[in-house]
Length: 209
Image (cartoon, rainbow, N blue to C red; front, side, top):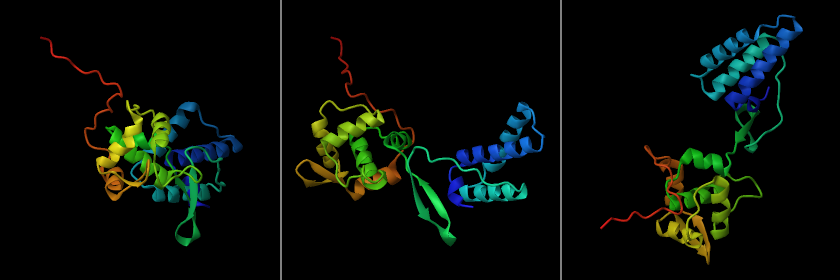
């Protein structure tokens, strides 16, 4: 059995539930809905302390114990890629999309968001979408896809992120992520107590005279 089938705990949990449900139906021992929910809740509570590899071992043992075959589902978003792990086991690696990555890292400024987009395109984006460099057009595209507030002047946003130390210039209008920007995304975000990003058109408060 491939370990990749159980790489996502939530998906694997659903597989296990369907497998157990199928066996119960075959033997005429279908439980009531309340008992099913109770069983699912118990399984989740027992597996929460375990890591993904330990959970996969539990699933494998249970299926073998019940003499049941693994249930596999078709691939779903976010995109995945396969890699060969120890002992030749095929594993599926989940690739977050830009919106998921933004929610995870919680950039709090346009400069940080530009660095995140550059990181996504150079390190995570699937084949055919990735890019080693970033420009104004990509900023507009991925800010919209991530639903991140658009700056008032997007044409200056990439240069501003470079001035902040996150990017280095490759050619006119083209920049790439540098080590400072990489470390920001991988190790610096999210920040604790991170506020929501300011809107693109922030109102300027005026002091009454």
